[in-house]
Image 1 (cartoon, one colour):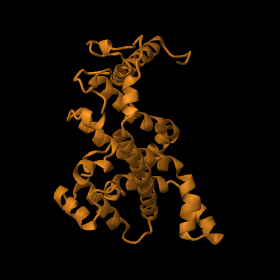
Image 2 (cartoon, one colour):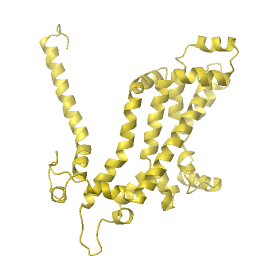
Image 3 (cartoon, rainbow, N blue to C red):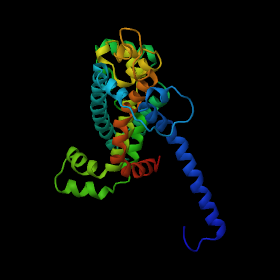
Length: 295
């Protein structure tokens, strides 16, 4: 607050801070509750009510999750999907957006219109499945990467950002003898870090959380990605199939509880994408603002 602000201004700012703090607490508490539940001993996990902390943290649930080969295999598949899918998507999105950022490109408006058409209409689920089958990529990670490799919305955001770059940079490079691909790779892309970081974050989060396409196209259990495994465990109650050790042979349920193990699995699945965000956050706002201009 500025010292010259009036009393009413300071009251409004104070109320804003209070509301923001309440909003942050409401947003964070569900995840915090999962974290506390995942490390709670059995007697505390079975109790109801708000969970703020536990005095006797128990990490048996995490041990059980990490000992499951199913979790490691699906985690590995998810990592491969995110890295390969994001790299391919960002590369081809930037490659498509660059020529569209040139106003003198022949048929620019028609090509842009055709790309926008795909945002409103698609071939449908069954034609899409038949196409993947005819391509022979069912039950492979390629079927999770290639169909959504280039998104119309990301192309438009990146095209708008590239239009903010001064034309004089490319003109100077052409005078020095640089070709179009060299200009795109060595000049345009390094200057496009904000929008590249923004699109990278969007695509990476999308790949990490996506499960519907995997449910449709993947039937081989060894090709499951982590969201599919989570869905089997959480919604279909198949925890003993994927996380053995939840119950012993005598039928006596051992620590921890099923809910504790489920909470630990969710926390583990959320940590990687949470760790990526801080590295891209500083470019995120700039990338969105500049990419949205001239939309």
